[in-house]
Amino acid sequence: MEKKDADVTVIGAGLTGLTTAFFLVKEGKRVRIIEKETRVGGVIRTVKKEDFIYETGPNTGVYSTPELVQLFDELGDRCTPEFANQKGKQRWIWKKGRWHALPSGLISAIGTPLFSFGDKLRLLGEPFRKRGTDPYESVAHLVKRRMGKSYLEYAVDPFISGIYAGDPERLVTQFALPKLYRLEQTYGSFIGGAMKKRKEPKSELEKRVTREVFSVKGGLQSLTDAIAEVIGSEHIHTGSSGLSVTYSEKRYQCSFSREGKEFSIESDYLISTTGNVPMLKNIQFIDPEDATMLKNLRYAKVIQVVAAYRKWQGLPLEAFGGLIPSGEKREALGILFTSSIFQGRAPEGGAILSVFIGGMRHPEYFELEDDRIRDLALKEIQETLNTGETLPDLMDIYRYEHAIPQYEKSTGERLVAIEKIESQFPGLILAGNIRDGIGMADRVKQGYAIAQKIIGEQHG
Image (cartoon, rainbow, N blue to C red; front, top):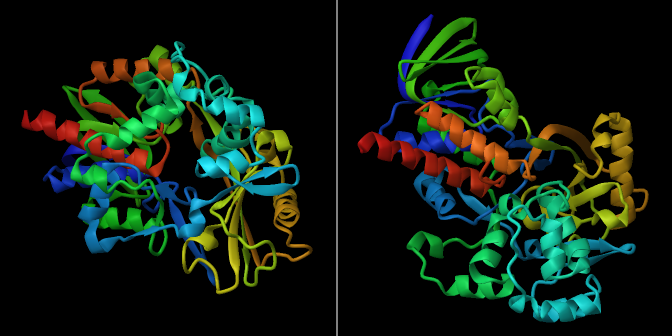
């Protein structure tokens, strides 16, 4: 058995694990990453096929945290962010057989047919409504209380489908949309709070946070590959199997197999970033009662159908994509128009789309055969984007059984259990999308925070 020693062992080479290791390595820490797949990046993967470039897993991120800005700064020329063009600023919402642009300001909000006249008037009173008192209030209840039913049905419901593939009646605002929750709790209003926050002093990094949609030149995999390059391939153990973790004398020992050899890594810190299912399989010394609280996390099952056209003959794709409210009773959650917002993703005059199916709305679709999924996706494209009988030149299907964690009421119990476990085992950190958000910026922010915590403890 080959034995190695490290300051920190990270389980999982997805964006969270890589970011954590990146910032630790920059401070001179000895880090080892253990990854079961033969590549880094986790769910982030860019496919270059024929004349097309597309993503499986996350398709875009939001340039929304100072930590993300700093990460790109430190990566320098290794990786360049690419921001969505003007088309990416518009979102379409499906209502009664056609697409409507989601309002982006007061004038468009007054004229849109998406919201009822009564709710448009009701919105004027939003700054004067009382704060909510239920810390477990659902997103749906909060929106109806402050803005009205039509805003829930034709803005927030499709937005939640696009982000979480989830149900706004079950997602808890405090956990799923913490920024929205804090706006009401801190400032008493969404509208007033947003205005006040814009006036607050910002650091130089915060001033560069644009909240624009971004990708990376060459695809998102270029980001994770660049981070791994800085860390060094010799510190990343891909293709690992049979991982077992033990804790003795305030140190963690990770044993695993790789390329026919047995390895053991001892470290002061152990960071798990892989989600609750593989984590509980590998870290077996966690108390069964606490483990039960970690198991309560539900995941949306999502199917992504990539449809690529060398010559697009449907509606002009002048938007980021289209979202479909649950009340419209269609098969898809939404359709992303990747080639309309980023350059070089399809040939000139062509298009590449991603149709998302399933989620918490239709979990049963995950079990359908590929031919049935193709038929569903093609029907959605033809009927909503007016492509007629035109067939795509390429059509690929990707299934994600544990696609997106659902931050429901059980999240509170899970966070308490995580805090308890980490206090019992100094140096153990349970991370990843089991807490702190699901977006790419959330993952980078968490990784940076973990790295700073460890650096502070070791220097203290």
